[in-house]
Each structure stands twice: as structure tokens, then as C-alpha cells.
Length: 407
Image (cartoon, rainbow, N blue to C red; front, top):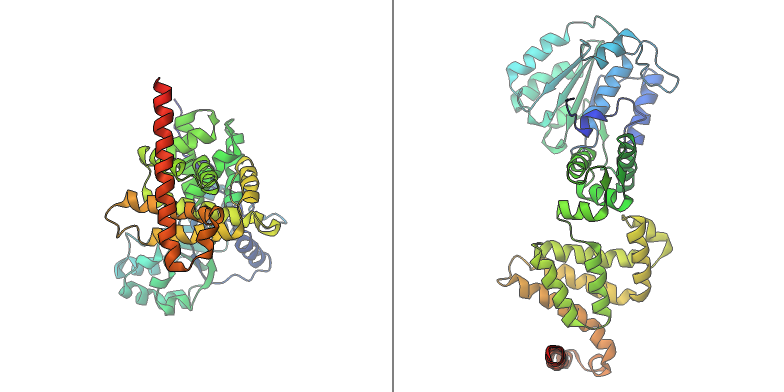
């Protein structure tokens, strides 16, 4: 039985070209290598799982490559590259500052920096989570970081740049890594699925990418989890079931009920959602995002901001035609306000139901002219009267239908 290797390790980028979503940074680093304008200290800053340590390793490997390609990639054929690939290179040193954050640890590093490389031109020191160093350790590191030996290059990686003292920042070239876009994640996940012989629906991969929140490592971990659950075919339904994600279909049904001023159906759909164990506040946030997505579908130039699969995108385009901009804006405002007040509510279910009823009331205003013409103080009383009367009629009709069905 072969040992399983998680996708985040198995498909970890080994060249600048294979790094996902950081083209500006990889291009800058390649140009610096080509023009031989290497700084002595770099700071890679960005959220987790976006490729900071990976880029540091690729950079360290490439600057020591004896025969780099014309594209400034490592050749993987020379002794330096082979040593790196086989984890026996003495030119690359990694230090975890989270567990080596004392002055003594930095002094040991400083002593090690004096030793020149045996193969290649540079010794590269990658210090991960550098913000975890103590203040005394930072101060002990200052002089070496500013004037290191000619063969030493430092690459500091961190997720919290604000915790690093300014005197350290001033001695580094700073690269800000971006969160990886959903489209780039979907393309990479699709590539990996193809390599593994797994069939995956684009909508399913899109949900995985959104759940990862800009971190490719998180996306690959979720992907492995889904593969263990679904096998060789990944479907949209399997992903939302495994990740406990609320199906887009609920939001489309709710919007149809809102437009029809059918608050009864709205409350029934809400009951289905809560019965499945979904958090009420997450539902409100998702509903607000749904109206936001409907808004951006109203204009051709903003459709590109919609981060969903092709099938779901078509549904958004169809429903956006039925939703007026004023309705979507007011509904979005209602969702936002109720989301803000959610935690202070003692009856959260009723709180959400009131939000849905207010959105239904937006459609009732158009269907009841007397509501739109009355003063604001009178509008509220009239709206309550209309909702109450419709409630009686609605439940009366349902009881009648239930009675006739039982007969």
C-alpha cells in the first residue's frame, strides 16, 4: 500500500511558472535574478496559504542553479538543483521563528551565516513566521540583516507585518502576496483533478474555492476531503452536503417568493433552512450576498464580479431581469441592518422572520398603492394591517385546502 501524500504537498509548485495567482511577484523575482540585482533581505507578507514559503524556496533554488533556463527557471539537472530536490542542499536553511524566537536562536543563526556555501553562490536563510521573534531577538538580528556576508540572502515570511519592528522592515524589500482569486483556484483544482483522473463539476470546484477564502492550501485540503467523501466523481450536491453549505437554490426560491409578495412561502423556506441546522446569521449574510450578486448582474460590465459556476451564473442572469435595482438595494439594506442587530436579539428566529417580512413588504408597497401614497407614520400602520389581513387570508386558504385534501 503506497503512502498517501496530501495534494498541498504533492502538487506544491516547484517553478515560478507553477505558482498560482502571484504573477507580479514571480515576474519581479525572475527579473531580479536575470539582471543580477539581488537584495540581501526580502520580506514576503500575505495571508496563509498563498505561496510565501513556496516562492521563497523556488527563489533560493533558482539563484543557486548553475544552468538556469532562458525564462529564469531552475534547470533541475545541475548538482545544486538535485541537492535541493532531494532535500540534501546545504545552501538553503529554514528557521521556524514560532519555536526559535529567542536571542540565543538568533545568535546561532548569525554564527551559521558566516559559513560560505559549498555548492553555488548563495546561502539562503528562510525565516518563517518572523513576527514571532521577541523584541530582543529582532534587535540582535538587526546588524546582520543590514550588513550580511556577500553570500547570504535572508527571506522573511509573515502573516502579520504590523508586528515586525520598523527597523527590520526598512532593511527588506517587501512583497505583498494577494489572496488567490476564485477563478485561479478553480483552474488549478481542475488541473489537479485531471491529473488524478477525477471528474469534477465546475460548480463543485467553485464552492471549494469560495470556502478556501483565498488560500490555495486550504482549497487543496478541502479538495482532498471531498475526494475521500465522493470518490472519483465530484458533484455540486456532494460538495454542499459535505461542507454544509447552503444551496443557492434556496436563495433563488426565496427571491421568487419575495417578488410574488408571498411571505407564507418565505417563512416555509426559512423553516426548511433552519431545520437543516444552518446558522441564522450565516443565512442573512448569504441572502445579502445573493442580492448583491443580483445587482451586479444588472450591468454587463459588472457581471465579471460574479464568482459562481457557469450553471448558477445563468440562473442569476435570469432572475436579475425580474428584480428591479431599487428593490435589490432596499433588500440588501434590510439584510445588512438585521445582520448587525442579530447578536443582540433574544429571539433570533423571529428576528430573521421579520427581515423576510420587511423584504416582502417591498413588493406589497407596489401592489398596494395606498401604502406608497400615505405619510411614513401611516405607512407602517397600513403595512401591518395589510400583512395581518393577508396572513388571515393565507392561513385560512391553507386550512381550507388542507381540509379539502383530507376529504
